[in-house]
Length: 296
Length: 296
Image 1: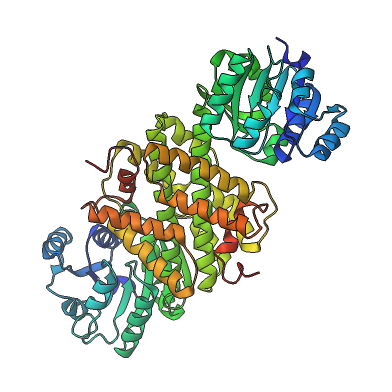
Image 2 (image 1 turned 90 degrees about the vertical axis):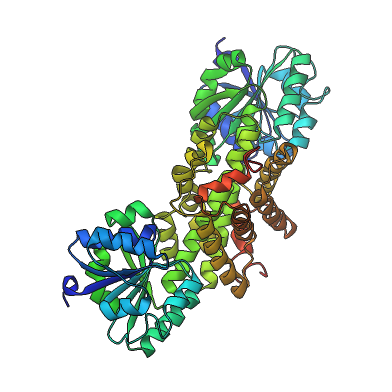
């Protein structure tokens, strides 16, 4: 199968999906059709890429062979994979599901696709917008190994690190844990820097000391400065952080594992949503811990 | 002042203090006298170093010019710095206080030393036993700059990174924040790995994925494997972690900064102490989150 002869479709063309579509087009794939509940997003991307924007998921299935879905959450996944949506006349289609959703939803979708004689892989992304555009995503794949082998060249064009994790749901579990720990470290860093600010410490000095000690972390590098200067332009939204920590916490609840820090982290991100700040970057959790900010 | 002509004393010769004494001896300093509430520790170290072990802090002041204190907590600091302890006939003595204690206790001690015509610096260590032995500590100094300048060569012999932070209490604040964030990241990592174990994931794979994504942290490097293989030989005890998070949480409480993750972290470490596991390494927080372990 020459993947570059396939018609590629996208369902969900927000920041991540749109940049993955651009990347595939750059690599010579035939991006044929795009769709989004925000129809203006789909229209604008279709204009840019010279492809078609359609009104609903069923039309994407009708007009594409390989379909990437990059939707918001569990509910959106179930919506697009309805029998009159992506699964309508879906025989032979391959779906690559890139959203961070509950592992059980990936399992449901994989089963529903099998019933519709279609194939599904979960392609969980542990990276952000820039990496989507440049084809340097960190991708973890769950589903049938044979399907993975079939689409591996395309996945490689999207990623700098590609890892087949296991059957349906497995990659989503790993992804949920990555974001769970990342979110804990982010909310914890916001507490450290926020308290440092309240104590009148030099935050540049504090950040540098953190970086050289046991307090160091990837999120210190990516979010530390943003927390200090209040630059919360969105790469990974607070609302997504709340959702992802929520997925992990539901898994923990089912498994009977106590995760008090992750529960506190989800509560912090939910609080940001309640304050109307769910659209800010995850670094905005510092708005809850720096003195004076939460009253702004 | 030639520091190598001074008589050096140590109060508190546990894992850290003993190794700092060994290091100073190796560097040619005159380690003259050591003391510990555990008198056998002091005796054994004195035999090893060919110096004197004495029964109480006042005798250390009587027999040394420059005294390093490496005690357990706020209460121990106040005990050793009593008027019939280290402060008895202390005129002209220089105290280097290396324990992680509350910033306000460093301020109290600095004031009491000034009244006794002695000098005090806080020398907060963000490293562990190996670094103490090898003279590669990460040291943050608080107190009078002139005193710092006086003892800088000795501090350099103990450290690979030396930083003068500010007046009394300032270095202790930075140190409290370092350990606060480190402990949060540790307890959070234990939740991620513990839930991964409960979900039946390959933990080596999970740890590697963490290391390449937003979940990466210094404690993943230092404690991740120990959590998986249950190697909790003590470098930095769970009891110390509880104490240090408690110092940060008290500061946050005074400052009115909400720190829910740090509060959850302290609670986890206190739970380990309640379970009789406070003497294990901080990595033992994973004993609370891996399936089946807490019943052992």
